[in-house]
Image 1 (cartoon, one colour):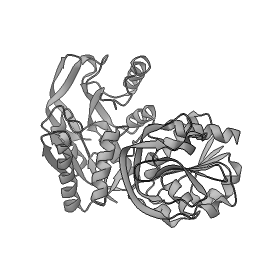
Image 2 (tube, chains in turn blue, purple):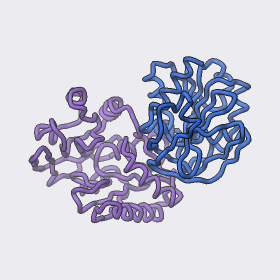
Image 3 (cartoon, helix red, strand yellow):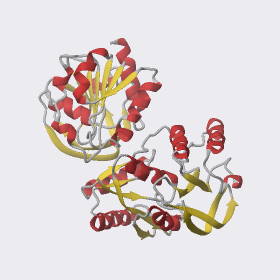
Image 4 (tube, chains in turn brown, orange):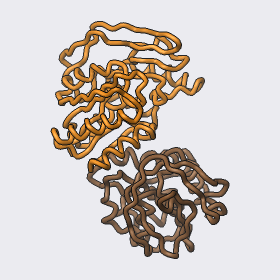
Length: 188
Length: 227
C-alpha cells in the first residue's frame, strides 16, 4: 500500500482536489492500493505501507512549514517521494534550509550525471516540468542532486535511504516519475 | 475566504465556483474578461456577454474587464481586473476552472502570486468522467454553445449536458480522443442553472452557425425565471 500524505492547509479542504487527488489517481492507475493521511495520523500508518508520497500544495499555502515530518516517520526508512512542499520538508528537516525561489509554469529540467544512473531518472536527459513554488531548500551532504533547473535542485535523493524529493509537480505532464516511484516501492 | 471567481459562462468556471462554495468559501464576485478577439488564447467563449445574467441568477456582483485579446497583452487586462476586484470586494483568493491548461493556470498563478492572493483550481487534473457525472447529479443545467473539432457537428449545438450526452461524448473520446470535458477546446458550454443560482436562465431565442468544422449556438435573447 502507498500512503499519500496531505500537507495542504487543514482548514482549506478544497486544496485536496487540486494537489492530492491527481496524485492519488496516478497511484491507483498503477494498480496500487492507496490511503491518504494527514500528518497527525502518519506515525500510526507509515509502518503499514510500502511507499510514502508527500504531496505539494498551493503557492500561497505555508501551513506545511509549521509541521515536522521526519519525527512522524518514527524511524521508518522505506521509499519516500516528497513533491514540492514534501521535498522542502525532507531537505529542511535533514540539515537543509528553506529559501525563497519562485518558479511558476513549465521550466526546463536537466538531469545530472548521477541522476542519469538513478532508477527514478534513468533514460531522461532534458525535459520540461510544471513548477509551482516560491521556496526551495538547500540540501545537506546527506542528499545528492539528480536533476536541476536554472535556479535550483529539482530532483534529489537521500544517500542512505530510498528517499526522493521533486520540487516540480510530476503529476502534471510527468506522471512517469510517480509511476516509476510506485514500481520501485514494489522492488525495495 | 472571500473569493473572486473568474467566469467565462461555461461549465468549468462555474463548477469551480460551486466547489469553493461547497467547501465553505464565499464567492464575493464574478470576474469576466470580455475579449474582442475571437482567437483569444484565454478568454474568448461564445455567449460571454451573458455572464451578466449568470451573476444576476446567482445574486453575485460581476466585474467585467474588456480586452483586445492580444496574446500576453490580455494578461495585463486580467491582472487589472483581478486587482480591481480584490480592492473592491476584499478578495483573498481567485478560483479558476482550469483543468489541464498549464498555459492558463500558470498565468493566473503568477498574477495571484504577485498580488498576494490565493489561487484555486479545484478541477485541476480531475477525472473528467466523474466530473461530468457530478455536474449532472449536482443539478447544473448546461448546454453546448460551440463545437470546434470533428466529429462534433451542428447537431450538438444547443444540446444539454446530461447522461445521454456523457454516453455520446464517451464514444467520441474512445474513437476520436475528443476530451470528455472539452478541455482541448473541442466544445464550449453555457450554464443556464447552477445549484447556487436562485434563478434559472431561460433561452428565448438563439441562432446556430456551422462552417468549416466549427459552429456556435449564439443566444440572442434570454431572461431569468424563478428556479
